[in-house]
Image (tube, rainbow, N blue to C red; front, top):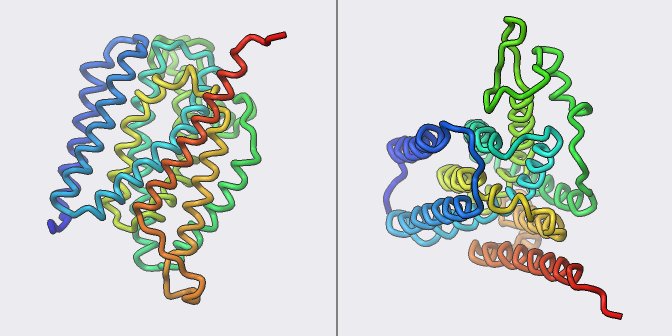
Length: 319
């Protein structure tokens, strides 16, 4: 089995930076809308790259770690669907034109990678030195899942958001967009545009979601490299997935309920996994493959129920 070295970390990070550079340089110079076809192609590309990486893990690290990666990737990808809904609400609240949304998401993903990397690094150190932290993560995910099940999402109100209110106090804000730029000149003074506030809100939203999603992957594996790579691949595909699903995400009415069940299951798994801190009669080892199948089944059922309900509503009432 190949040992993960700093060179593997450096190589993977360089690969990610190259992908972002290509996106920001070659495909993001002019403000333009992303078509459904383009979003579908790029979603397929990112998914294929993730599965190719899983194949490489099979060759160099074995089936167990490859399964852990796929499970972590699926968990991160599923939880990002809820993130997509919130991002759509943010864009709607600020009335961001479709041609400007792409640049916000690219920079948002770049910031998310930095924040996730830092959180995973801290989480890995905590788990390695204080194994009881896994129980804290598990309890937190359990409570979060239950809370998510009973919480309904409404419209985003920027004027009530503490982050936006704090930013408005620190920096002058222009009243209108300046193309897809985050700054503008107003009476000779450098000011932020509303698009900068949108980016700040998107980054804050991802940070909040990361508090749930990062511990969720630690329930599958405590290997920092697998946690990091599964997170990164899910984040890289977030932008194209947004443009693919943003218009229809509201139709998935049972998706949030499904995601809450995923969090409850993952939190329960983390609490029941064998450790030295609890009696053996309380310990239950849930295989990674079982976790993968369970998460996939919950998502499939939630989406299927949502699509079925939407189709029933679209049918004309028969007298």
